[in-house]
Structures are given as C-alpha cells and as structure tokens.
Image (tube, helix red, strand yellow):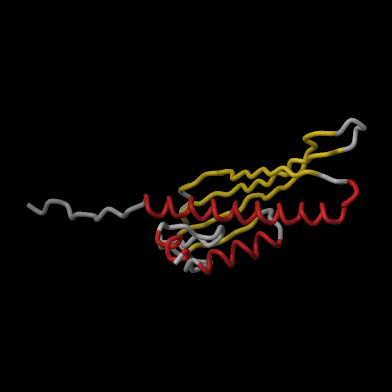
Length: 164
C-alpha cells in the first residue's frame, strides 16, 4: 500500500526519471571527454530512444568535461578536513547547416565532503562515487535541455503562396 501511495503521488527513485519527449536523431561528437562520459551519455541517449547517426539533422557536440577539487577547510593543525568537488560539462547543439540551437552551454555540479586522513582509501572511493554521481546528474541535466529544445521547436506548417 505504501508503494502505491508513493508512485501515485509521482515519487520516483533518484535516477529513474523517464524522458517523455521524443528527441530527433542526432550526431554525437566528443572533443574532450572521459571514456566514462562517452559510454554513459551514449547509453542514456540510446535508452531514451534517440537514434545516433552520422547523417542526422542535429549535432550534439561535447566540447569539454572537467573535474577538480579544492580545499574548503582545514583543521587547527593545518590538515585538510573538507574538499569541494567540481564537475563541468560544456556542450552545444546545432543543425547540420551550422545553425546553433544551444551554443556553448555549461552544466556545473559541486559537492563537498568531509576528508579523514585516517581513512584515505575509503575517502578516495567516496570521492570517485561523488564524481560519478555528478557526471550522471550532468547527463540528466543535458537530457532535460535537449528535451526543452525539442519541445520548443514545434514545426510550423508552410502554407502555399496565394494563388489568386
């Protein structure tokens, strides 16, 4: 009964978002991206029903993917106690004639975590999981932006010139 109440109100597990908008076939190009991003983005597009083709009318270009970390705080002895992790994805979408639909857009994610020098291996694994999570959230945000472009580009019918 509890599960039916949750699903009835629209609640879903994180990462289980369904994409209802049909996206047109796309070319997918990577200029600078990790192998994990290439694999995960390709898989997400295909599972959403997007046909990936070299002769498609739309071109999605991943210009760059970067990740980094910076110190947020140190303890009284000068040792790092907290880091901020950053992930950024820069992309654009155009048609095959070069008309830009989305131009050099950025998706940025930040997460912070407590660092414990006595558990370096565990914290290293936690950091990698956070980077993986931020990459997945960036891909979900990219999919929402692609949907917004697809739904806003409703084709208007062309009417013949007045033949009078």
